Length: 242
Image (cartoon, rainbow, N blue to C red; front, side, top):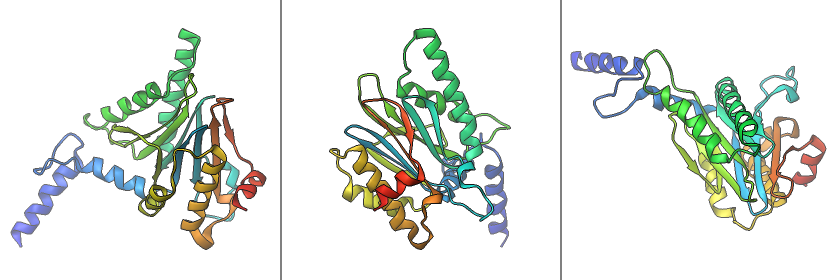
């Protein structure tokens, strides 16, 4: 009994400090941040041959909420978009930082910033919060996607602890395992933006089942031709769901 109590006390100590590793080499607060992301509403990104697609579930918790007021997708620059799962207020702080970095680059170099520079800017801030006492990790993962100046579509995932990966298609939040398994079977690099939107919306509809409706979904894309973030209206969403 005393041994169990001591183990609980020890775990609580490692649990409370972000700068302290547990005996088995883990930062427990970082792991908790990752669990927070999995509890968030679903967010999906798909890289297509002619652009990138974002599909998200806004998870409307009350009939009194105005669906349009729920923000799950953000514009960093005309050619770069972001969506998130986890604590969305944390996401806004990171997006503000990314927007400032994009504006500074535009003013200094008179050109559009590349997507990887935005990803690294976000991840640098996230990483600092895993090694500084008195801070907590950002409880959010971001999907960052866009089209480069040369027309290449790119998609990245940033983890709460500051690591990032490039993906062809990625999903985070609720239903991550189920939707990812479907993406692995149905994703093709030859997908167009239109096909990517139909795929993403269809997978989200299959996951949410009877809870699905157009009001709780947002979708957007950036194509290689215009290199501009475009968010779909409810009427446009209905067309893709037919």
